[in-house]
Picture 1: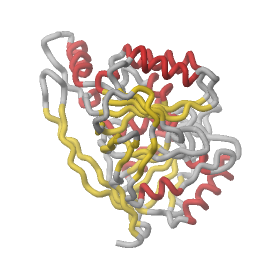
Picture 2 (picture 1 turned 180 degrees about the horizontal axis):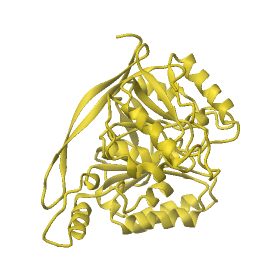
Picture 3 (picture 1 turned 90 degrees about the vertical axis):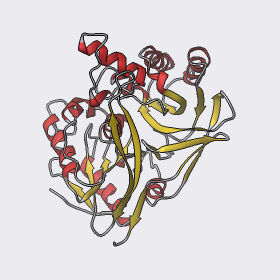
Length: 360
């Protein structure tokens, strides 16, 4: 089942302590610790939780070579591309679920790196709320991997990296692996922002959530829905059948300290606008301090206009920014999710909770 090369990441993991709050839903405190990846002992587990691609085995070999060049040992399940009756899945639901769970339950696996996005994570994620996590973990990926980011961030309180899937490191996209490695080494990151609508000159601090806009919209009303405290309370009271009684479901906790990151691909302007309106109508923006719009690639010429119009007319009280180079383009700056960041003077900056050691 396992094969190939590793690099170790030192995690600064946040552990959440949930405290019952009969009015606002659960609250939590964040305690941080370093997450360390030891190249001699730890492994990267390569999984394909969603789709495969043409020449998948050849691309997998190339990705493993890239990781090996940087000193990483990898594990790959023999059934990673075993296929399914539906051609857009890399493997059956059961196999994709099993491979993800085994990566979470393997103490030697510190990094879980998605081979590709596409579609598939939401099919099995509802079976992932009771995995016995062993050891520190970090997930790397984007696009459909948004589903797993939200799972690990909100349910397991794991910091994850919104960054390149392995196929994006290869032609034709050729995204650079070094920004991700630098984050794993513990280096500080800064990303230039362009204001769409600035509310004030004060610094904005919070934790990044979100990812792919279309995927995020499809997760509304699921266990991965982003909630404010007030929205969480409303959900709890509705589900109890008694407006006076609050049901505390650990999958539906709220947090009012979020900075929302959004990106997308192959979506026309009207679809982008419709998805943003849908998020607004569900109350998600009640818990958002700022929104960063990454790249919306391969859409149409009206996408930027649609985003700007939405920001100016629908969410006047939220600061909004554009960040080039986050998403499906040739550049995909890694961003740490579920980890404190700061927006200061139109720059998004964050320290890294990770560390790589050669031997320790």
